[in-house]
Image 1 (cartoon, rainbow, N blue to C red):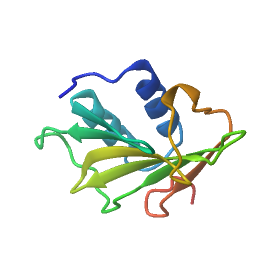
Image 2 (image 1 turned 180 degrees about the vertical axis):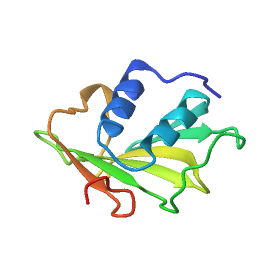
Image 3 (image 1 turned 90 degrees about the vertical axis):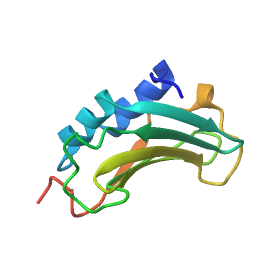
Length: 124
């Protein structure tokens, strides 16, 4: 189990949380006190979080309140899913849209699209 995120993973989370949505501060607080395990495969990365259940829960029942798509110049988009289970961040899933090999050093975050679940969307 790894306790800290590396610089690339911190950048991903910064981008993922740069969009406004309801309950964002609760999830950010959970991240501050999380233990992290990272799993990497050919086309998939999982940042798995272990959250202390005494911390305040995210009040929405969304499993994926925020999705981020990072469009790449010469390859398929990279998808980032913020997964919440029972009010706690469970994991951040990172994968290529076409299941091709993922290279964390080459992920471009300049052209991003966010999909926010309507239940947590801050815009009314």
